[in-house]
Image (tube, rainbow, N blue to C red; front, top):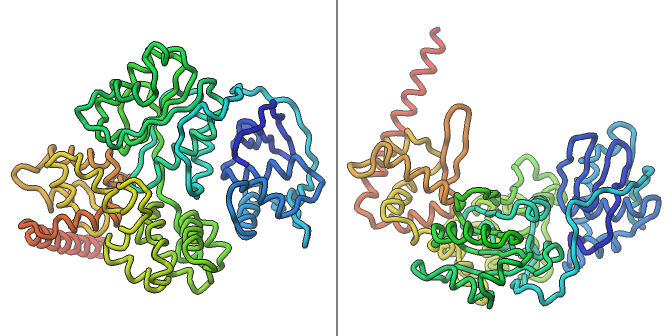
Length: 490
């Protein structure tokens, strides 16, 4: 499902303490919204609308995954998540019954009442868009995509940010597909990746859309500007102009850094969740994690008959962990499963980015390897930003600003200047910023660190920085030891 094709006003479906606002794809328990993935919501809608009937597993799969080939285990994982979210059986109330050899049935009483629909969808002819075709489904993003679809028609300007290879374009494309019916004049996609920095952005946009500013002024449409990183300043100015000139236009941006303009809503695409070691008890449990789901689906596409076994779980988890839960990196690694096997793949994935350089030849160049994806960001950094990023690769784990100032500072990179550059790299999604208690720690994704170390390998500064890092660690451990002794004496 997840296609929003029903143009009739949907009712609010009520059962137990819950109200399911179907059009808004929202479940309330009293005034509290429940967190629930998009697939689980799709399954719930099918079951609730047929309450008291048995819905076969085949029917559910056909309704929820109409364009994908999935196995029954996917359905069981989402049913289990749905039951947990509803507290099924926890207080004596049961909602979803498993009917052996037949399917599932929603067994609680359901009532309905009409809900106000804040969005009025309109039928849009299929030619009212220029969206590129997706070759594969988007894995593990249902909740995020559902949230963006609900917000986009009312916020006008939204920017999707995130690290290289995290899937910003894939998320934006799926959001655009689902919003086609809400924009009377369609959804229009413009990729700015190959645009020269000096090129006039407005002229490029109007030429791509075969229109003029006056015509655009009256359109009720969604404009998607993909890969705005390298023309961020010009894009910010263009967006402000368009929003003022075209009051019915909505704009969706993908960029590794927010535009920083007024009225901008920013959403960061997170890394795909990876199971902890303690949760590797069963294949079903591991398949509840999006990183594992993506690896398995791409491995099956590459190697006919691939099946995830319990003994494979530690290896698959380690591959996904080494690759940071980045969708592009996981897809590139899984594409080598037929040549290397799972054991060989796990061994090779620790060797750097070489393994992640054999993607689809039909993909855009920056998506054919992880090195290309990172390089696309790296080459648009200033010389000082590049230098800081490479020097920071000396840290194997997270670091504080204090540690960075102690280890990598030099005459022209010190104090507030170095701090500002590090904070800027975090805004550009090349560093991850994580508040911990009263301080802030930064860390690099493994893929970014490997890229930086490859670039830094022949630098004259490498040996000196490694020695400075070792001395800093020694001082830190020594200070920690003294603190423990003082604490014990006191």
